Amino acid sequence: MKCQSLLRFVAVQYERIQYITDLATNMVNCYWQVEIKNLNSFSSVSRAIDFEIARQVQLHSQGQEDQIVQETRLWEEGSQVSAIMCSYIFVYNVV
View 1 (tube, rainbow, N blue to C red):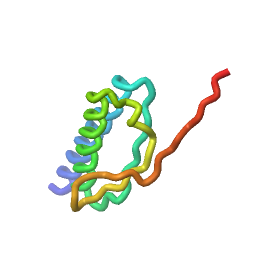
View 2: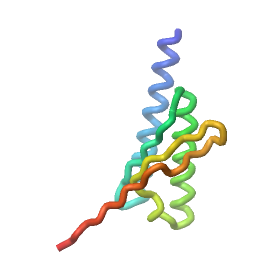
View 3: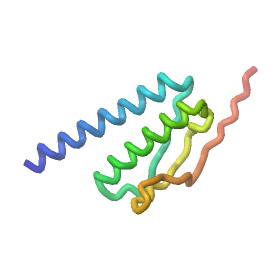
């Protein structure tokens, strides 16, 4: 029984990850990876994914796609939000 529940949970999380990937690919010309740290339970993973989806959708709907960048964020379980830990800036030279 526990194994079935775990497999269902993993399948749902996989679908959510696929949704984030599809959403980012369709909405933004370039998809940036957002890594979230401090996830200490499956429920934390679920809440962090839901928060990240909402955060990126809100930025996109406000026309702030340039704010969706590759970064590492810290999940704060108490306040149910993530905060920036480290942002990665890439400079491309186009010749």
